[in-house]
Length: 219
Image (tube, rainbow, N blue to C red; front, side):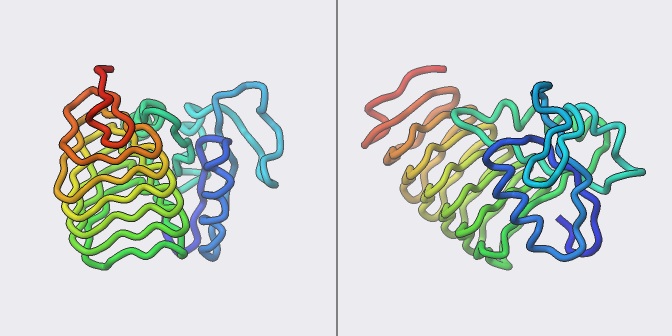
C-alpha cells in the first residue's frame, strides 16, 4: 500500500476487512472508493461507513480511472482457495494488488516482500525472511529469522514460526500453531488450530494436534 495519496478498492466484506480498514486508515491521504463482495444480499449496504458497490469481478470497471489498486481483504478459515482465485483474477486483468501492513507490526528491513501482503497488528517478521505473493499474516504472528513463505499462504492469529521454517504455496496454518525450527510445510496443506509441528509436512494433507504428525490425512 502506498503512503502517498492513493485510491483503493477493497475486496471482501468480512471480519478481516474491519481490521484492514483500520490499517489503511493509518496512512494519510488514502481514499477507499468502495468495497466489492460476491454476496449479492449486501450490495449497496454500508460497511463501517463505506459502500459495498458490487461483486469482486466489477473491479475491472473501476481500475485505472477510479482506483489505483485493489486490496484483498478476504480472510480464510481452512484453506486459501478464495484468496488465490481473487489474486489470480486481478493479475490476469493487470490490476495492481496492494498491501496493507499495520504500523503496529514489527518488520525487519532485511527481508523481501512480494505483492499483496496483509500484515495485521502485532505481527513480527525478523531478519532474512522471504515473503511471496498474496500472503496474509493475522494478528500477533511471529515469523522468526530466515523463514520462507511462498505464495497464497495464510497464517491465523498467534502462529509462531521458529527460524528457517519454509511454508510452500497455498497452505493454511490455524490459530496458535507452533512450527519448530528448520521444518518444511508442503504445498496445499491445512494445519489445525493449536497444533505443534515437529516434523516436515508433505504436500496436500490436513494435520492437527500435538504432535501434529500423529494426526494426518490426505486432502
